[in-house]
Image 1: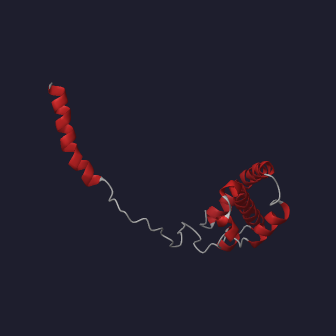
Image 2: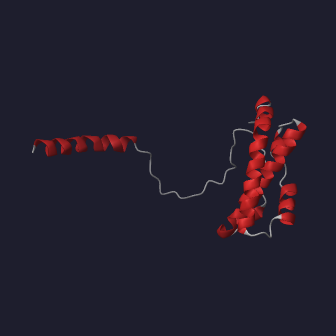
Image 3: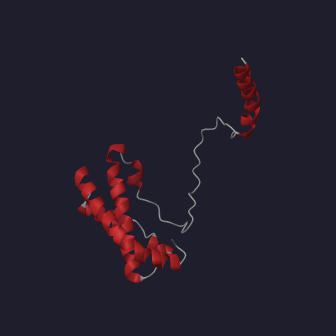
Length: 139
C-alpha cells in the first residue's frame, strides 16, 4: 500500500516541474519563409525550380542532380585549388543542363547506378577537396 501512494505522490510533485520545463506550445502553423542560413557561403545560388516542384515519386531525379552538382563543384575545386564560394557553390545551369541532356530520361534504376558511381567519385575527391577548403575556411 505504501509503494502505490509514494508513486502517486512523486507523480503529483513531478507534474508541475515537467510542465515548467516543457517548450511552449503554439497553434501558429505559419511556415517561416526566411532565407536559410548556412555556416559558410550564405549567398548560394537557388536550385532550379523544377527540383522543388517535382512529384515525390520522381524525387530520385532531384537527388541525382544534387549529387552531380556537388561532384562538378568538387572537381573544379580539386583542379583549381580554389574553394571560394563561387567555386564551391557555382550556378546550377551547367549541372542542370548536363543532367537534362544526359540523365533525365533514364529509369530510376539507371539513376541509382549513376548515383553510386558519383558517390565513389566524391569519396575519392573528398580528401584533397577537404584539405583545400579547410585551408580557406570553407569546409
